[in-house]
Length: 370
Image 1 (cartoon, rainbow, N blue to C red):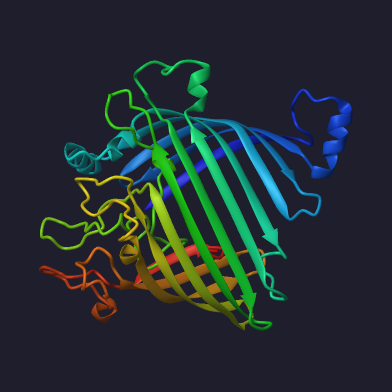
Image 2 (cartoon, one colour; image 1 turned 60 degrees about the vertical axis):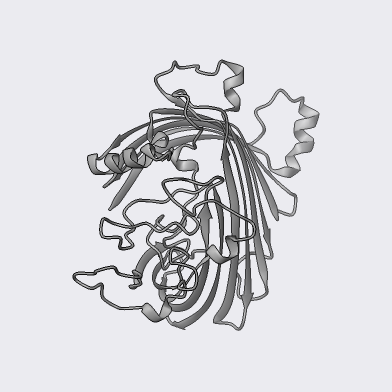
C-alpha cells in the first residue's frame, strides 16, 4: 500500500515577473504569459519507506496565440528531502550497495535544485471522437546547476547533492473509428544521466524521484508497479524463483502502447490493449546482470503485455480497471521469453523452480493511461 498526501500554495501573476519595460510587456500579452510562485510539502508513506519533501519554485508559462502549443520554464525548482527506510528494505539496499549498486544513495537526506523546460503541443483537441488528433510533450531538466551560484555544498556535507541531466519525449495519437470507438497509440522515451561525485565519493546517482520506472497502471500493465526490468535482469528470491520484491529504477526508458476503446452503454466503456517497453541503466550493474542498454540488444529486451479493461466514464471522472497478462518477458532466458502459454489464473501454493510468474495483474487508475 502507498499513501501520498501534502499541500501546496501557488501565487499566479498574469505577466512575467521580470524587469521588462511596459511596451515589451504589452507586446508579450498575446502569448498569455503567467508567473507561478509556489511552495509546498508532501509526505509519502509506503511499506518500504517514508519520504518527506519541502519544495519551492518559480515558473514562467506562455502559449502560442492559437493555443496549440504551451511552454513552461521553471527557472528554479528547489527541494529538501528526507527519508526513513524500513529495516527489511534497508537490508536489501545494503546488499545491493555491497555489489556496487548506488540506489541506496537516492534515499539519503538531500538537496535537489534544477531548471526545467517543457512544452506541450495539442493538435486538434487530443481525444475527440470527430477527427484524428495528437499530443506531444517534451521535457528537459538540468539538476545541480544552482550549486555554481553558491558552492558545491551550500548546506554542509551531511546531505547529498545531486547533479544530473534528464529529458523525455511523449507522443500520443488518437484515431476515431466511429462515434463510439477509437484507437489510441502512445510512445514515450527518455533518459536521466547523473554526473559528478557524491559527498561520500561514490559514483553519482539520481534522487529517487528522477529515476524512470516501468510497470503499473499507466505503463506496462502486465507487470507490478515499478517492478519491470531493468533490461533482461532476472529478480529472484532465495529459491531462485522470479520475485518482484523491490522497485527497479532505470536511467533510460522506452515504452509504447496501443488501445482499442469502445463505448458499451451508458457510462460503461471497454478496452483491449497491448503494451511494450522497459527501463535500462547506462552501465552494467553488477547487482543486476543484464540491466544496461545496448543498441544491438535492446529490442529483444522489450517486455510485452496485453489485456482488457473496463472504464466507468462519469464525464467529470473516469475510473479504470484493467487486467494485464505477460506475453514476452525479457527476464527469461533467450528462447524462452514468450510466456503467454505459461499463463495461469492462480499462483501455485508452493512453487518450486517456477519458470515464470504469469498471473493476471490488476490495475486501478483514474483517467486514461494516455
